Amino acid sequence: MLDATLLAGQVFNGFSVASLFVLAALGLALSFGLMRVINMAHGEMLMLGGYLAYLTYLVVPGPLAILVAMPVAFLGAALLGAVLELTVIRKLAARPLDTLLATWGVSLILQQAARSIFGPIGVGVTAPDWLNTGFLLAGVYIPSTRLFILAVAVVVLAVLGLVIARTRLGLLVRAVNQDRMMAAASGINVRRVDLAVFCLGTGIAGLAGVVLSLLGPVTPSVGQSYIVPAFLVVVMGGLGSMVGTTVAAIILGLVSAISQIFLDVSMSQVLMLLSVIVFLQFRPQGVVATRSRALEE
Amino acid sequence: METLLKMEAVTAAYGQSQVLWDIDLDIHKGGAVALIGRNGVGKTTLLRTIMGVQKAASGVIRFNGADVTAQKPHERARGGIGFVPQGRHVFAHLSVEENLTTGLSALAGRGRGLIGQGVPDHIFDLFPKLAQIRHRKAGVLSGGEQQQLAIGRALAGQPKLLLLDEPTEGIQPNVVQQIEEALRRVRTELGVTIVIVEQYLDFAWSFADEYCVLMRGRMIRRGTTAQDSAADVAHLVNV
Ligand SMILES: Nc1ncnc2c1ncn2[C@@H]1O[C@H](COP(=O)(O)OP(=O)(O)OP(=O)(O)O)[C@@H](O)[C@H]1O
Ligand SMILES: [Mg+2]
Image 1 (tube, rainbow over the protein chains, first blue to last red):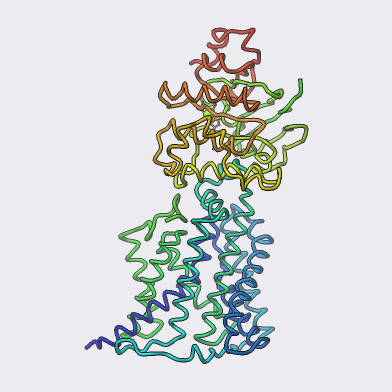
Image 2 (image 1 turned 90 degrees about the horizontal axis):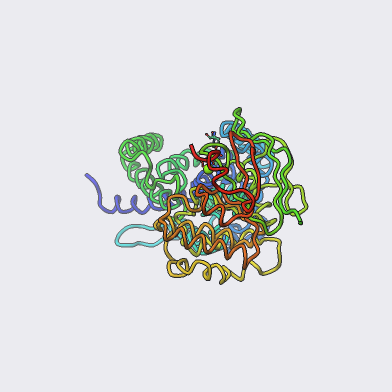
């Protein structure tokens, strides 16, 4: 027998899981869409964001630390992204397999570095009081943290959408995305656009890390547990589209949360994988077919 | 006469298969050169090599006094080379105005605020049609409109040299005339030097002052359109 309020609660949970998925997956989708690059160290950008949130709490404790942590984590992860792009990814351009291996190596190095600096056990960030509450909505208890996560994802998507649709950088990104050769021949520094998009993507992952720190401890391997669903989201979304990524994140977030009424966490992960496989049987191109129209949908 | 573009012993290849051999070419400022030859002889490859989207396997390319052989395409664009490729390559999902705006990128480093001034009016003056359809997506335009857009986009970067690859290919005759007219004005009013790949010898002869014939990747003949007639070279171009 299915309790309606339990279901409604899990649906809401599904949306907040989807928010995490979309924040974790956007960077992967953006850089894959533009550069056809798979960054295996993307999960460690989440990890970095989480640790930066922890450090921010140490330096500026108080109820608004989380709001300070977000720009810090965004910039920190974007900076690490820049280093990774300039030292590894750019050097291996057009060699996807090597990029995969090299970024996997970077991922291991970053995890080990976190282990050495912060220890193997996780560090905790306590949510400020104003997030440690909740309220009842039509009989369903809504924790404020989860609402906050949802709000962060909505704001990030809206800002990203505006940047891509309305700014000069967004125009250049769309041009490079559609026809790299012609963009370069028109005077666009395509490598610089790649770098900007890559940093934007890792910065968003850093934000995701801050949000994650509200839900559980930040550990050296925290990124690993989110990277798999993030990859699933990117594949299902159509490899690079923003709208596709968002829709796929919502579907998988709901699948994950609702199935947890019946199943344990690992079985619900299996169910997520299965639903992606089934979905791709019917729509192999993903939610939004990318190849040419990736970012403006 | 002052040289704008000079190629010395340039070769180009796709992987293992060499496509251009020993290309020597110099083009003086203000000139218009027609590049002609049969299908598949390497005309497109030659223009791509000048633009830098195709790497020269060997040889030297000088533009406006500087060695640009090692420069990336966007650096050459910013140096003053504009490119209208075969097949037009408009950004299909961008509007006409956005397409033109991307062309302004070539102005980077040429003076403060140039990009902020937007698409210059003279482009709409040359192609009034583009002004009417400025908010439409490039992908839905007719071939002729796309071609005008591709030329406009290249001109937005205020090039010194314009590379045109078969600008009249697959376009209705009345639009071809408009494009020809606009290109003449680009030469005379804007003073842009032009290299044009053109199948129609009549247009090539009325437009260009020099011609070069490519055959199997080599430059086999060069002359002025004033001295030689189109009929003299037709057998080298037509199958
Ligand atoms: N991307 C590519 N990879 C491999 N070979 C190519 C490629 N592009 C062109 N070629 C080959 O290089 C040669 C020259 O091609 P190119 O496009 O430069 O000729 P073209 O003179 O412009 O022909 P057309 O008149 O048909 O436009 C041809 O034999 C062609 O098959
Ligand atoms: Mg050609």
